Image (cartoon, rainbow, N blue to C red; front, side):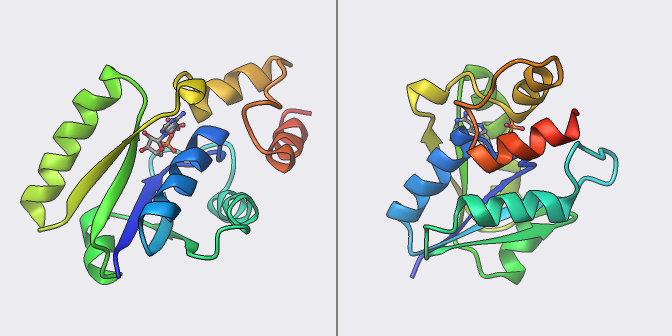
Length: 157
Ligand code: ADP
């Protein structure tokens, strides 16, 4: 049994995230999508709201569960007996940072990191950009699940 974690802010979940989660669910036995609780950054959606949207977005994937964590990801991995961390890579800029993180996490514990390349249609997609466009009334409905779009519209109403 291989258990992996897909960590992130998911503020809110996008189709780019879902692509990585769905592909992880095909590759590994168990996938935990873990929302990082960042005490220094409030975000647009609360942690329970992000988890609720993730639960709804992954309801069709029986081997995917959601959770949240504070502190070090490697500690979450140890506590939950996670075998590997899965990260999506969009661009070279992602790679620089993610390689450094992967090596740091690897030096702290035995946990390895697996990179999954973004699907080309999502390579420009980030939650921050989706929020920026939605905030100014732009149409992001093709980039996020319908119910996420509804909640986003409500937030900026
Ligand atoms: P964002 O940059 O959208 O705020 P997060 O911090 O929530 O994303 O990232 C969680 C994980 O999802 C990271 O591994 C990130 O690289 C990955 N990810 C986010 N958007 C995409 C995308 N469009 N394609 C592939 N991976 C992505």
